Length: 222
Image 1 (cartoon, rainbow, N blue to C red):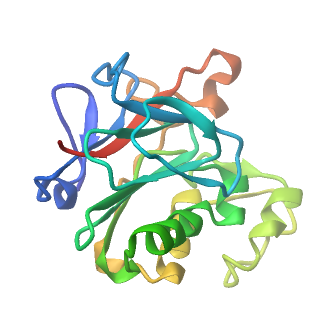
Image 2: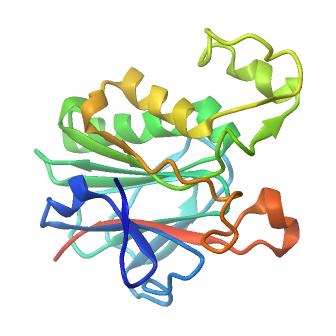
C-alpha cells in the first residue's frame, strides 16, 4: 500500500525500507522537488530510449527513462495520466525512473531501463524492486481499435480489442516487468487513477490543455 506524506508525495513501503534511496510519486499538491538543483530530466518523447545519467543536473537529452548509480542525482519524469515507474537494484545500488504512455508501453520502455541497468551496471532483474505509480486507470482509459489492437500480444486473453475498449496501462507495464524477469512479489502497484481523482492528481484526459504535470523521482542518497 502506497502512503501519502506531508509533502503530497506518494511513497512505497518497500522503497522506504531501503535507507539509501530518496523516492516518490508526486501529486498535484507536491512542491518538494520544484527548483531542486539535483533534478535530472529528459525531454520526454514517448519512446523506449533510456539515458544513463552521469551526475549532470538539468535536462540532459531526449528519451523516457533515466538510470544512474551516481549518488546525489535525482532522476525525474513528469506525467499527467502516463504511467511512472521506479526501479531500484538492491545488490548494485542502481536506480531508474520510467515514463510509460501507451506508445512507450508498447515499445517496452520499462524493459529498456532494466536492460540498461544490467548492461551498464550489472544489475539482475531478480534483484530489482519496482513500483508503478499513479496513472490513468482502466476505469477511465478508453481507446479506439487503432490503439487497442496493438496491445493484443500483451493482453492475449482479451476479446474486444477490435473496437472501442478500455485499457489497463498499469497492468500492461506490470506484465512488461514480469517478462523482463522482475519477480511479482517485488512489484508494487499504486492502483490510483489520475483521471478519477481531480482533487489529488493532474489528468490530461480529464483537463486537456489545462492539465498540469506531476513529478516522480528516485535517487541515491549522498
